[in-house]
Length: 469
Ligand code: NDP
Image (cartoon, rainbow, N blue to C red; front, top):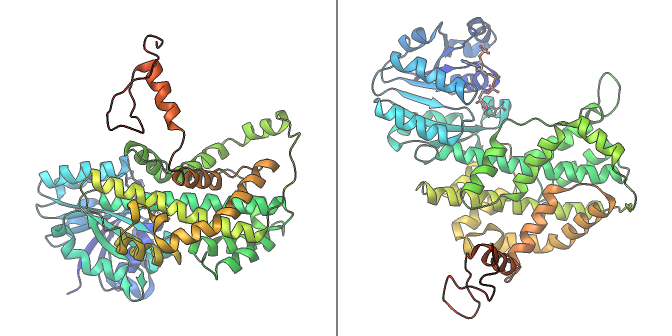
């Protein structure tokens, strides 16, 4: 018999995932807040309709599923998902499994796991990446929860997932919030990658390139070691024409970016874990600043651009710089994952994470194969950019990254993500930096103490006793 699964939420992602499940042989009972969407969805499903069954309200959905039940939620993260779980709980039986496939904050997933398990239910926090197309034909799937909860759905989850050389891009990564956290950091890396691409685009615009010409360049980059879904998307959108004006589509789109939270969460969690994913932070900042176009217009009028030089950076430099900076963004993202894995005792398999990102998800790129091998081999000092092949690529790209960032600075073009990648690697390249001065300052005003270069003693103080506040 086909496995019966419930699906709540027939929005963009829920509809696509329900069709994917039905196509892979599951019998999917679908439910939606706006009930009229249910018959409409089934009538549009064509031959797959025979594997779909419509439910009215939540009680009807639950009644249509045999025990133990498996129900996927594909609703907006946050309060809507909590309300949905509260409404479902009285209808469920002990041993039933809820699977939250939305972009939930992993802290919420940890809390929900504890509450639902206490009440006798099972819960999986499942990150799904790949947008609508991925959800329909094969997303990358990052699962958190108990192995016991995952076992009965493993087969169907692997069936609907993207495949990389026949291997499913789905994995049970750890307990409770592990899957949603990995999905969050995936999105953080996505933010950094998109921002770097936008910065490259800006520099090429300054050099007089039009959108189709830049799109063609990205098309060429897609065929080399920059090959990735986001580079393909960039090529496609830059080559598109606005049907109304005949202009390049991107030229008539407002430069005001939206965000739903996962980039910001990555940055906040990184800071809480004692890390700092500066390339991702720069990308979040760029979107936040972009959200106030009127302020920027006032700035354009008020702030004198005098003294700026026109510095053109070459396409070849941009390519090398982007590759190095992209590696550093991945490195920061993986470092955050490592820190979270240690803090929450998730025992994340980083190589596996990289493997399931190789197909289906938004950040899939040819680099991920090398990133997963590097993790399997063991990272020097836990740093991805020190792994041999990646280290060589960063070293090769650094001179170009310096020319790009300095050229951008001289011509007044902001490149926050590229610049933070450069500052990061320049910091990590210096055996001795300048925080000796910070420690001296802290000791002067707050008697915080320092360590000396020539002693193992801790909590030492400088000859400024009595001068502090
Ligand atoms: P949509 O806005 O397309 O759909 C939202 C769905 O949730 C609809 O079925 C809607 O029902 C229902 N819904 C909204 N609010 C409530 C509520 N308060 N109570 C009950 N049902 C509600 O969203 P998406 O499909 O894009 O996203 C769903 C989830 O997947 C989100 O968590 C999102 O972050 C995540 N996600 C989205 C991706 C994407 O590319 N879009 C990629 C990966 C994850 P109704 O028809 O009645 O409005």
